[in-house]
Amino acid sequence: MQRKICDFHMHSFYSDGDLLPAEIVRRTQVLGHRAIAITDHADSSNLEQIISALSKASSQVSEYSDGFTLIPGVELTHVPPESIADLSRRAKKLGAKIVVVHGETPVEPVAEGTDAAACRCPDVDIVAHPGLISEEDVDAAKRNGIFLELSFRGGHCLGNGLVAAMAKRVGAMLIVDSDAHTVGDHMSHSDAFAVARGSGLSKADAERVVYENPSLLLRRLGLD
Image (cartoon, rainbow, N blue to C red; front, side, top):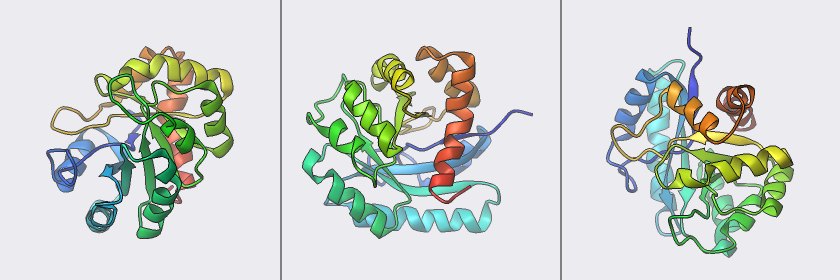
């Protein structure tokens, strides 16, 4: 029997995704997920409404979908690096179970210093697709227990090899996420494993990243 997977970074129509949370839940259940996080794009203007809406969706999943977990979260996106600590803290107080920060990528003009701020913030759980990250910041992520993402999404995946190599050298934790926005973006088991292996990880390391690290994160969040 194939082991179930997790995905902690995807978007609904509460930001720039196309799908209702309920449809995302159903599509990922069919693909063999045991837990997902919907982490819609957020800044100071929409933090409250996103967390409120996704918390309601999460409660309904808890009531009707035994054995499957929907985690309400946010992805802080293009916010000033100096605001990351405050916004992350506010998100957790408002009920976000997981905080993702949109990292510095090769394909978007994310403010310099975003990775550094995110990797040093105790309320951040994942730095998403940080393809321009420095080894100093990877070391900070390790010290703070923050996961670095290997991305399934086109464009963002261009930095996966660098992120994986530095994380392995330093000993930081990696996680594979889809950054899904629409139908066809959600990962299957084989997709997640291919992302890890395609980033240069050995089979054993890929299995750890795809199966064991999500369980570590769920336990940290009090959800496993």
